[in-house]
Image 1 (cartoon, rainbow, N blue to C red):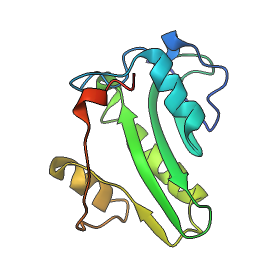
Image 2: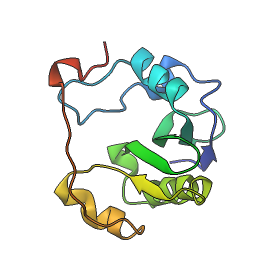
Image 3: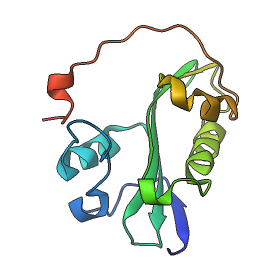
Image 4: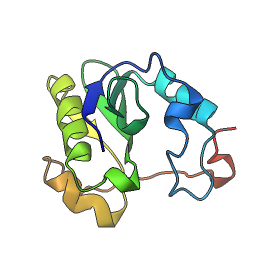
Length: 137
């Protein structure tokens, strides 16, 4: 495995660079849909294998820029997990959001300890999941 390069720009990326992300989802978005997710995110941090290699991890956020931010996605490819990439992506994003009052995310119980190590704490939330639209088509 090569050197990991962190960036906040989705350009230039091709569908091949993101193919295979969301592999653990029941119905994964297509590479074109993943690129739309990146382009539509207000904040994005990428981890790539080298300067122009595939995306091995990323985190996104949406924010009003003053009071609140929401982190909808953090993903690291399975073969790269356990190397601190997710932690570095969280650290880089939280640095960009350090002036924000409320930074929220929803996650499954098994990953709560990961987020607790980064200063998050469990809370109560509500959500809707439209699994028939999980592929972002």
